[in-house]
Length: 132
Image (tube, rainbow, N blue to C red; front, side, top):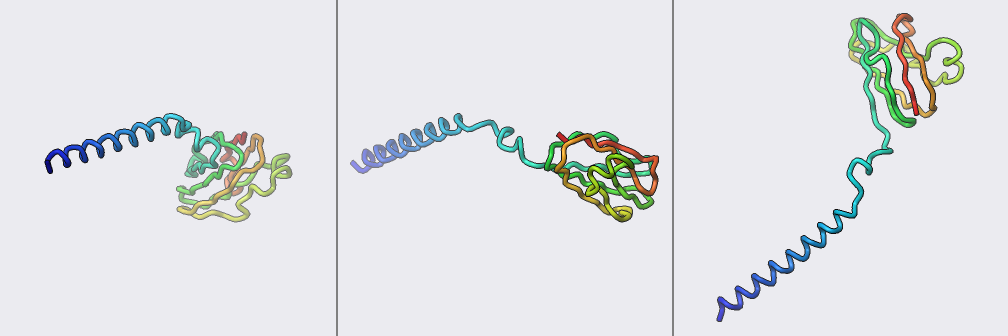
């Protein structure tokens, strides 16, 4: 008799666990794909500065994204918008000082547009960030 009670109790537990599993599986099917959960979340993009300039030389980001300019060169860098007219339109994008080798300057882009920038200390090092 004790074996029958144990068997029935175990069977009930298995049935309840099965129902719980099926119910949670159905709920999971109704969730949006994980990629959609983070689609509009701001991200951070890294641009490397070295002896040949900025890599990549073109970056495409969304408004609200942050760009980290990491100086891996041997000399200082100073990221800023290229001269006129961008410098007057978006003056906030300017490190306002030299960034030493090994250091990072971060800037969050909140204005859409195509932003041409350069190294204020080596003006021939130019690049572009497109913000959607």
